[in-house]
Amino acid sequence: MNKASEEHLGMRISGWGVALPERIVTNDELSQTLDTSNEWILERSGIAERRIGGSTGSLAVEAGKLALKSAGVGPETIDLLIIATTTPDDQIPATSSKVQHELGLSCGAMDINAACSGFVYSLVTGCGFLKAGCNRVLVIGAETLSRFTNWEDRSTAILFGDGAGAVVIEPSDAGGKLLGWDLSSSGELRDILHAVIGGTLYMAGSEVFRKAVIAMTESGKSAIAKAGVSPEEISLVIPHQANIRIIETSMKKLGIPLERAVWVGDKTANTSAASIPIALGHALDNNQVAANDLILLVGFGAGMTAASAVIQWGEINE
Ligand code: COA
Image (cartoon, rainbow, N blue to C red; front, side, top):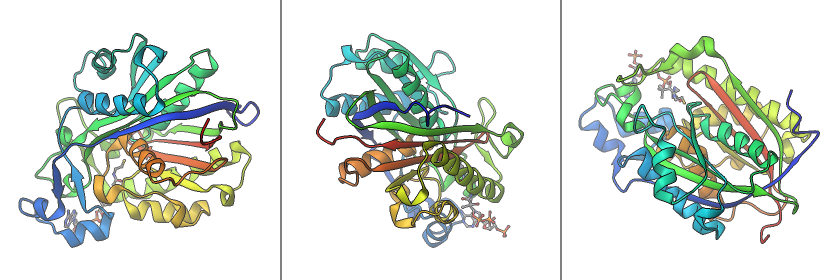
């Protein structure tokens, strides 16, 4: 049991940025080479199109630059860089090395791989570093899943896309808080979604679907309970953007109206660790967050991992 509920960490997200490759691949385009259709993909997943291109590092740099700009801070003020990715550009070194250099940061840098739960794992880790004395941490989720997709396999090729999202976090005493969090892993399920080194993604689709709903629900409920709030008090949910049907079922089980969930997966498909910061950036850009709002970030992914965080938004113009 973590102690977030006893010692709420005063923190705020002071900047954010989203980077998506320019190239849009529609369901109709996929249907030209795969035995599938726009109707099937839309109905089963809610995905209409995805962005393909770039490298994990280049997308992370682009999102990171935007986050620094939106926070109004220079690279020299960042005390730690964390990149959540399950599709690093190289085996060695970590993608964060390149990103740190290209952003002009002079701090420590590391990658975290918790698959699609990676951004929330990294955000919670970043908050831990704030507590340990860092003044500002840059957390980026970045992926190029297209490099690990078998484009001849219709059961997986339709689901994934590339992109990156970044946030700057810092300590705050203006109402912003990490109220509760939950990180979990069920290693016995690691084979239902995996890629061997040098290989492409294998997925037992319907089993992943069932386990994903359980993981989202249990993890979300756990973070809400640790935050000491009730599901009705959550004003916005940023779920992992894998499949609208997974989100619909999980929201029902969490007891939170579906209208409170952000869904951008129709335009991005599943961008793994990038999906939550991309959806969060979209919500913030569209003024969907007000002072004192309670936001639930909830994700699941290969491993199988799950991760959730309940954040209380602080003063907007701090
Ligand atoms: N187009 C048309 N038919 C397809 C297809 C496609 N792209 N992909 C699979 N099918 C077929 C299957 O071959 C199967 O045919 P069969 O009944 O003749 O064997 C049929 O559609 C039903 O397949 P099924 O896997 O039961 O469909 P589903 O309703 O479970 O939807 C997924 C498939 C992949 C969309 C769904 O299982 C899913 O989203 N799973 C979770 C995936 C996920 O989130 N992964 C990332 C986790 S981070």
